[in-house]
Length: 103
Image (cartoon, rainbow, N blue to C red; front, top):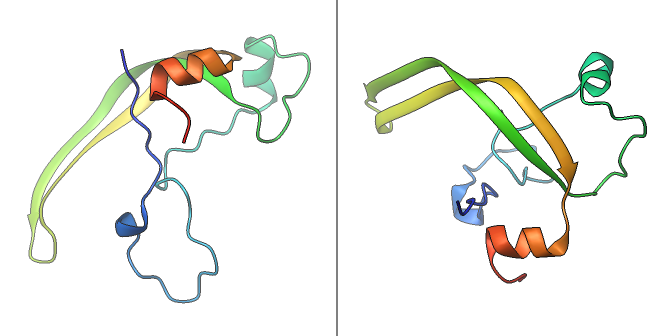
């Protein structure tokens, strides 16, 4: 299975006044693992900031929505709740396999 990068392109950014730096990824894609989660994942040492890891997750669909808007046409969304996950260190071979050659 080839994964798709969710990184935002400059065209994806809606103009927002007052923001110095635009986010690299859409709101809501960030996960925060608390102490209990780290304990369940048996992570004894914290990873370095910027380190790449592989996330495997089982999710449950918790909401489905579709509506029309006068401002943006048809909109669809799916809400997912992560129910099970595992983390492992990612190596360059794994990244290349998932995303192709590095830019």
